[in-house]
Image 1 (tube, helix red, strand yellow):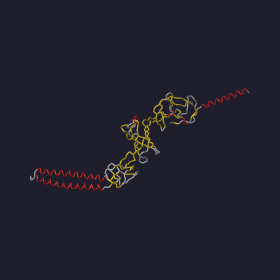
Image 2 (cartoon, one colour):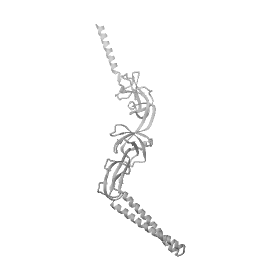
Image 3 (spheres, helix red, strand yellow):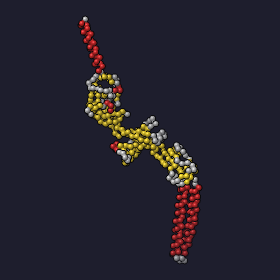
Image 4 (tube, one colour):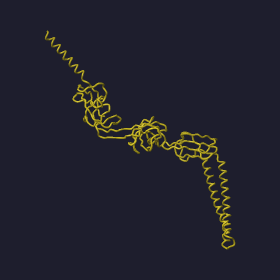
Length: 360
Protein backbone atom coordinates (compact mmCIF):
# COMPACT_ATOMS: atom_id res chain seq x y z
CA UNK A 1 0.00 0.00 0.00
CA UNK A 2 2.84 2.34 0.95
CA UNK A 3 4.69 1.35 -2.25
CA UNK A 4 1.60 2.13 -4.35
CA UNK A 5 1.21 5.51 -2.66
CA UNK A 6 4.87 6.28 -3.28
CA UNK A 7 4.52 5.41 -6.99
CA UNK A 8 1.42 7.60 -7.25
CA UNK A 9 3.23 10.50 -5.61
CA UNK A 10 6.20 10.10 -7.97
CA UNK A 11 3.93 10.02 -11.02
CA UNK A 12 2.13 13.14 -9.81
CA UNK A 13 5.41 14.98 -9.27
CA UNK A 14 6.65 13.97 -12.72
CA UNK A 15 3.41 15.13 -14.30
CA UNK A 16 3.63 18.46 -12.48
CA UNK A 17 7.23 18.90 -13.60
CA UNK A 18 6.20 18.12 -17.18
CA UNK A 19 3.42 20.71 -17.01
CA UNK A 20 5.83 23.27 -15.59
CA UNK A 21 8.32 22.69 -18.42
CA UNK A 22 5.52 22.83 -20.98
CA UNK A 23 4.31 26.08 -19.49
CA UNK A 24 7.79 27.57 -20.00
CA UNK A 25 7.75 26.93 -23.77
CA UNK A 26 7.01 30.27 -25.44
CA UNK A 27 4.80 30.10 -28.49
CA UNK A 28 5.23 32.51 -31.43
CA UNK A 29 2.64 33.35 -34.05
CA UNK A 30 3.62 33.98 -37.65
CA UNK A 31 2.96 37.69 -37.05
CA UNK A 32 5.55 37.71 -34.24
CA UNK A 33 8.51 36.64 -36.37
CA UNK A 34 10.09 37.32 -39.72
CA UNK A 35 12.58 35.56 -41.95
CA UNK A 36 15.75 37.52 -42.69
CA UNK A 37 15.58 38.18 -46.42
CA UNK A 38 17.52 39.82 -49.20
CA UNK A 39 15.82 42.90 -50.58
CA UNK A 40 15.95 46.56 -51.50
CA UNK A 41 16.01 49.32 -48.91
CA UNK A 42 15.27 52.94 -49.72
CA UNK A 43 15.91 56.02 -47.64
CA UNK A 44 12.94 58.33 -48.09
CA UNK A 45 12.57 62.06 -47.57
CA UNK A 46 9.04 63.17 -46.72
CA UNK A 47 7.82 66.54 -48.01
CA UNK A 48 4.48 68.29 -47.84
CA UNK A 49 2.84 71.38 -49.24
CA UNK A 50 -0.16 72.85 -51.03
CA UNK A 51 -0.82 72.43 -54.74
CA UNK A 52 -1.07 75.32 -57.12
CA UNK A 53 -1.41 75.68 -60.86
CA UNK A 54 1.95 75.66 -62.63
CA UNK A 55 0.64 78.20 -65.16
CA UNK A 56 -1.50 81.04 -63.84
CA UNK A 57 -2.07 84.64 -64.80
CA UNK A 58 -3.54 87.82 -63.38
CA UNK A 59 -5.59 89.82 -65.88
CA UNK A 60 -5.38 93.60 -65.40
CA UNK A 61 -6.89 96.59 -67.16
CA UNK A 62 -4.58 98.37 -69.60
CA UNK A 63 -6.68 101.50 -70.20
CA UNK A 64 -9.19 103.52 -68.21
CA UNK A 65 -12.87 103.51 -68.98
CA UNK A 66 -16.30 102.07 -68.28
CA UNK A 67 -16.95 98.33 -68.47
CA UNK A 68 -19.72 97.53 -70.93
CA UNK A 69 -19.74 93.69 -70.85
CA UNK A 70 -18.20 90.98 -68.66
CA UNK A 71 -18.41 87.70 -70.54
CA UNK A 72 -17.12 85.09 -68.04
CA UNK A 73 -17.59 84.01 -64.43
CA UNK A 74 -15.60 82.03 -61.87
CA UNK A 75 -15.11 78.38 -62.77
CA UNK A 76 -15.66 78.85 -66.50
CA UNK A 77 -13.07 77.57 -68.96
CA UNK A 78 -11.46 80.06 -71.32
CA UNK A 79 -9.16 79.72 -74.31
CA UNK A 80 -6.07 81.73 -75.12
CA UNK A 81 -7.07 85.21 -76.38
CA UNK A 82 -10.75 84.65 -75.58
CA UNK A 83 -12.60 87.93 -74.91
CA UNK A 84 -13.32 88.44 -71.21
CA UNK A 85 -14.38 92.10 -71.01
CA UNK A 86 -15.57 94.75 -73.45
CA UNK A 87 -15.25 98.40 -72.46
CA UNK A 88 -17.04 101.46 -73.81
CA UNK A 89 -15.06 102.61 -76.86
CA UNK A 90 -16.62 106.00 -77.71
CA UNK A 91 -13.72 108.03 -76.33
CA UNK A 92 -11.10 105.78 -77.93
CA UNK A 93 -12.92 105.79 -81.29
CA UNK A 94 -12.81 109.60 -81.22
CA UNK A 95 -9.12 109.63 -80.33
CA UNK A 96 -8.33 107.29 -83.20
CA UNK A 97 -10.36 109.39 -85.66
CA UNK A 98 -8.53 112.52 -84.50
CA UNK A 99 -5.16 110.82 -84.89
CA UNK A 100 -6.03 109.65 -88.37
CA UNK A 101 -7.14 113.19 -89.30
CA UNK A 102 -3.85 114.59 -88.05
CA UNK A 103 -2.00 111.99 -90.10
CA UNK A 104 -3.91 112.93 -93.25
CA UNK A 105 -3.11 116.61 -92.68
CA UNK A 106 0.57 115.83 -92.11
CA UNK A 107 0.69 113.76 -95.27
CA UNK A 108 -0.85 116.69 -97.20
CA UNK A 109 1.78 119.06 -95.82
CA UNK A 110 4.46 116.54 -96.76
CA UNK A 111 3.28 116.48 -100.36
CA UNK A 112 3.34 120.30 -100.54
CA UNK A 113 6.84 120.34 -99.03
CA UNK A 114 8.02 117.70 -101.50
CA UNK A 115 6.76 119.72 -104.49
CA UNK A 116 8.38 122.90 -103.17
CA UNK A 117 11.68 121.13 -102.66
CA UNK A 118 11.60 119.55 -106.12
CA UNK A 119 10.75 122.91 -107.78
CA UNK A 120 13.53 124.72 -105.93
CA UNK A 121 15.98 121.97 -106.85
CA UNK A 122 15.24 122.62 -110.54
CA UNK A 123 15.63 126.37 -110.03
CA UNK A 124 18.89 125.85 -108.13
CA UNK A 125 20.24 123.73 -110.97
CA UNK A 126 19.56 126.66 -113.34
CA UNK A 127 21.01 129.15 -110.84
CA UNK A 128 17.70 130.97 -110.55
CA UNK A 129 17.75 130.78 -106.71
CA UNK A 130 20.42 130.70 -104.06
CA UNK A 131 21.64 127.62 -102.22
CA UNK A 132 20.16 129.01 -98.98
CA UNK A 133 16.71 129.27 -100.54
CA UNK A 134 16.88 125.62 -101.60
CA UNK A 135 18.14 124.54 -98.17
CA UNK A 136 15.14 126.21 -96.53
CA UNK A 137 12.67 124.24 -98.63
CA UNK A 138 14.65 121.04 -98.05
CA UNK A 139 14.49 121.63 -94.29
CA UNK A 140 10.73 122.17 -94.52
CA UNK A 141 10.46 118.84 -96.34
CA UNK A 142 12.43 117.07 -93.58
CA UNK A 143 10.15 118.61 -90.95
CA UNK A 144 7.10 117.44 -92.90
CA UNK A 145 8.51 113.88 -93.03
CA UNK A 146 9.04 113.94 -89.25
CA UNK A 147 5.50 115.23 -88.74
CA UNK A 148 4.10 112.33 -90.77
CA UNK A 149 6.13 109.83 -88.75
CA UNK A 150 4.86 111.39 -85.51
CA UNK A 151 1.28 111.30 -86.76
CA UNK A 152 1.65 107.63 -87.70
CA UNK A 153 2.91 106.93 -84.18
CA UNK A 154 -0.11 108.71 -82.72
CA UNK A 155 -2.40 106.56 -84.86
CA UNK A 156 -0.65 103.40 -83.65
CA UNK A 157 -1.04 104.52 -80.01
CA UNK A 158 -4.72 105.27 -80.55
CA UNK A 159 -5.25 101.91 -82.27
CA UNK A 160 -3.51 100.11 -79.40
CA UNK A 161 -5.62 101.94 -76.80
CA UNK A 162 -8.80 101.03 -78.70
CA UNK A 163 -7.71 97.38 -78.93
CA UNK A 164 -6.99 97.38 -75.18
CA UNK A 165 -10.65 98.14 -74.46
CA UNK A 166 -11.23 94.48 -75.34
CA UNK A 167 -9.62 92.42 -72.56
CA UNK A 168 -8.56 88.89 -73.49
CA UNK A 169 -7.37 85.77 -71.67
CA UNK A 170 -3.54 85.62 -71.58
CA UNK A 171 -3.59 81.82 -71.14
CA UNK A 172 -6.04 78.96 -71.54
CA UNK A 173 -7.51 77.74 -68.26
CA UNK A 174 -10.24 78.36 -65.71
CA UNK A 175 -11.38 81.65 -64.22
CA UNK A 176 -10.48 81.35 -60.53
CA UNK A 177 -11.48 84.87 -59.48
CA UNK A 178 -13.40 87.80 -60.95
CA UNK A 179 -13.42 91.31 -59.52
CA UNK A 180 -15.16 93.41 -62.19
CA UNK A 181 -18.81 94.15 -62.99
CA UNK A 182 -20.59 95.77 -65.96
CA UNK A 183 -20.87 99.55 -65.58
CA UNK A 184 -17.84 99.75 -63.33
CA UNK A 185 -15.17 102.39 -63.94
CA UNK A 186 -11.72 100.84 -64.14
CA UNK A 187 -8.22 102.24 -64.35
CA UNK A 188 -4.97 100.89 -65.76
CA UNK A 189 -3.48 98.08 -63.63
CA UNK A 190 -6.79 97.28 -61.90
CA UNK A 191 -6.95 93.52 -61.24
CA UNK A 192 -9.93 92.00 -63.06
CA UNK A 193 -9.44 88.20 -63.14
CA UNK A 194 -7.18 85.33 -62.19
CA UNK A 195 -6.84 82.48 -64.68
CA UNK A 196 -5.33 79.11 -63.76
CA UNK A 197 -4.30 76.27 -66.05
CA UNK A 198 -4.86 73.07 -64.06
CA UNK A 199 -3.40 70.72 -66.65
CA UNK A 200 -0.07 70.89 -64.82
CA UNK A 201 0.11 71.36 -61.05
CA UNK A 202 3.01 72.19 -58.78
CA UNK A 203 3.69 71.55 -55.10
CA UNK A 204 6.04 73.88 -53.25
CA UNK A 205 7.79 72.16 -50.34
CA UNK A 206 10.65 73.20 -48.03
CA UNK A 207 13.62 70.82 -47.87
CA UNK A 208 16.17 70.91 -45.02
CA UNK A 209 19.57 72.11 -46.21
CA UNK A 210 21.24 68.86 -45.11
CA UNK A 211 19.05 66.88 -47.54
CA UNK A 212 19.05 69.21 -50.55
CA UNK A 213 22.18 67.65 -52.10
CA UNK A 214 20.26 64.37 -52.46
CA UNK A 215 17.55 65.95 -54.63
CA UNK A 216 18.02 66.32 -58.38
CA UNK A 217 16.01 68.01 -61.13
CA UNK A 218 13.83 65.40 -62.84
CA UNK A 219 13.84 63.06 -59.82
CA UNK A 220 10.60 61.02 -59.68
CA UNK A 221 8.25 61.55 -56.75
CA UNK A 222 5.21 59.70 -55.40
CA UNK A 223 2.55 61.87 -53.76
CA UNK A 224 -0.52 61.30 -51.63
CA UNK A 225 -3.03 64.06 -52.30
CA UNK A 226 -5.94 64.69 -49.95
CA UNK A 227 -9.21 63.59 -51.51
CA UNK A 228 -7.48 61.42 -54.14
CA UNK A 229 -7.49 57.67 -53.55
CA UNK A 230 -4.57 56.72 -55.79
CA UNK A 231 -0.96 57.71 -55.42
CA UNK A 232 0.03 60.45 -57.86
CA UNK A 233 3.31 60.60 -59.78
CA UNK A 234 5.36 63.75 -60.15
CA UNK A 235 8.92 64.95 -60.61
CA UNK A 236 11.21 67.59 -59.17
CA UNK A 237 11.03 70.49 -61.62
CA UNK A 238 12.87 73.32 -59.84
CA UNK A 239 15.05 73.96 -56.80
CA UNK A 240 15.35 77.45 -55.36
CA UNK A 241 18.98 78.67 -55.30
CA UNK A 242 18.64 80.20 -51.81
CA UNK A 243 17.20 79.38 -48.40
CA UNK A 244 13.85 80.61 -47.16
CA UNK A 245 14.25 83.75 -45.05
CA UNK A 246 14.36 82.92 -41.36
CA UNK A 247 14.81 79.18 -41.88
CA UNK A 248 17.34 76.59 -42.96
CA UNK A 249 15.14 75.22 -45.72
CA UNK A 250 15.26 75.47 -49.50
CA UNK A 251 12.08 75.54 -51.53
CA UNK A 252 11.72 72.65 -53.94
CA UNK A 253 9.02 72.48 -56.61
CA UNK A 254 7.37 69.23 -57.68
CA UNK A 255 5.50 69.18 -61.00
CA UNK A 256 2.45 66.94 -61.41
CA UNK A 257 0.54 66.13 -64.60
CA UNK A 258 -3.21 66.71 -64.17
CA UNK A 259 -4.78 66.06 -67.55
CA UNK A 260 -7.98 64.68 -66.01
CA UNK A 261 -8.39 67.77 -63.82
CA UNK A 262 -8.79 65.76 -60.61
CA UNK A 263 -6.32 67.96 -58.73
CA UNK A 264 -7.26 71.47 -57.66
CA UNK A 265 -5.31 74.44 -56.39
CA UNK A 266 -5.03 74.48 -52.61
CA UNK A 267 -5.16 70.69 -52.13
CA UNK A 268 -2.60 69.41 -49.62
CA UNK A 269 -0.04 66.87 -50.76
CA UNK A 270 2.54 64.65 -49.11
CA UNK A 271 5.48 63.44 -51.17
CA UNK A 272 8.20 60.87 -50.68
CA UNK A 273 11.53 61.12 -52.50
CA UNK A 274 14.04 58.29 -52.66
CA UNK A 275 17.33 59.93 -51.68
CA UNK A 276 19.37 56.73 -51.22
CA UNK A 277 18.84 53.11 -52.21
CA UNK A 278 20.58 49.74 -51.77
CA UNK A 279 19.64 46.53 -53.55
CA UNK A 280 20.12 42.89 -52.57
CA UNK A 281 21.02 43.48 -48.91
CA UNK A 282 19.86 41.58 -45.82
CA UNK A 283 16.99 43.39 -44.14
CA UNK A 284 14.71 43.02 -41.12
CA UNK A 285 11.98 45.28 -39.75
CA UNK A 286 13.34 48.02 -37.51
CA UNK A 287 11.10 46.65 -34.74
CA UNK A 288 13.22 43.48 -34.68
CA UNK A 289 16.35 45.33 -33.56
CA UNK A 290 16.85 45.87 -29.83
CA UNK A 291 19.73 47.34 -27.85
CA UNK A 292 21.73 46.29 -24.81
CA UNK A 293 24.01 49.04 -23.51
CA UNK A 294 23.55 50.80 -26.87
CA UNK A 295 24.70 47.68 -28.72
CA UNK A 296 22.17 46.34 -31.26
CA UNK A 297 21.02 42.72 -31.23
CA UNK A 298 18.15 40.55 -32.45
CA UNK A 299 16.39 37.50 -31.00
CA UNK A 300 16.76 34.50 -33.30
CA UNK A 301 14.91 31.18 -33.06
CA UNK A 302 17.37 28.31 -33.49
CA UNK A 303 16.57 24.67 -32.73
CA UNK A 304 13.39 25.71 -30.90
CA UNK A 305 15.42 27.94 -28.61
CA UNK A 306 15.53 31.73 -28.36
CA UNK A 307 19.04 33.07 -29.02
CA UNK A 308 20.37 36.63 -28.67
CA UNK A 309 22.58 37.62 -31.60
CA UNK A 310 24.59 40.87 -31.76
CA UNK A 311 24.34 42.53 -35.17
CA UNK A 312 25.96 45.30 -37.18
CA UNK A 313 23.52 47.68 -38.84
CA UNK A 314 23.65 49.51 -42.13
CA UNK A 315 21.15 51.81 -43.80
CA UNK A 316 17.72 52.39 -42.34
CA UNK A 317 14.85 53.00 -44.70
CA UNK A 318 11.73 51.62 -46.35
CA UNK A 319 10.98 48.34 -48.11
CA UNK A 320 7.50 48.11 -49.63
CA UNK A 321 6.10 50.41 -46.97
CA UNK A 322 7.82 48.65 -44.04
CA UNK A 323 10.45 50.45 -41.95
CA UNK A 324 13.52 48.21 -42.24
CA UNK A 325 17.21 48.22 -41.42
CA UNK A 326 20.11 46.64 -43.26
CA UNK A 327 22.01 43.87 -41.45
CA UNK A 328 25.73 43.95 -42.19
CA UNK A 329 26.65 40.99 -39.97
CA UNK A 330 25.43 38.84 -37.10
CA UNK A 331 22.74 36.68 -38.69
CA UNK A 332 22.40 34.80 -41.95
CA UNK A 333 19.72 34.89 -44.62
CA UNK A 334 16.53 32.96 -43.74
CA UNK A 335 17.20 33.16 -39.99
CA UNK A 336 13.96 33.47 -37.99
CA UNK A 337 13.95 36.74 -36.04
CA UNK A 338 11.44 38.00 -33.46
CA UNK A 339 10.01 41.28 -34.77
CA UNK A 340 7.30 42.21 -32.25
CA UNK A 341 7.63 43.53 -28.72
CA UNK A 342 6.44 40.66 -26.52
CA UNK A 343 7.70 42.06 -23.25
CA UNK A 344 10.72 40.71 -21.43
CA UNK A 345 12.50 37.97 -23.38
CA UNK A 346 15.65 36.10 -22.47
CA UNK A 347 18.01 33.93 -24.40
CA UNK A 348 17.90 30.20 -23.89
CA UNK A 349 14.18 29.71 -23.29
CA UNK A 350 12.46 26.99 -25.34
CA UNK A 351 10.11 28.28 -28.01
CA UNK A 352 7.58 26.90 -30.44
CA UNK A 353 6.81 28.46 -33.81
CA UNK A 354 3.13 27.96 -34.61
CA UNK A 355 3.44 28.90 -38.30
CA UNK A 356 6.15 29.55 -40.85
CA UNK A 357 7.70 33.01 -40.76
CA UNK A 358 7.09 35.34 -43.67
CA UNK A 359 9.67 37.56 -45.37
CA UNK A 360 9.71 41.35 -45.10
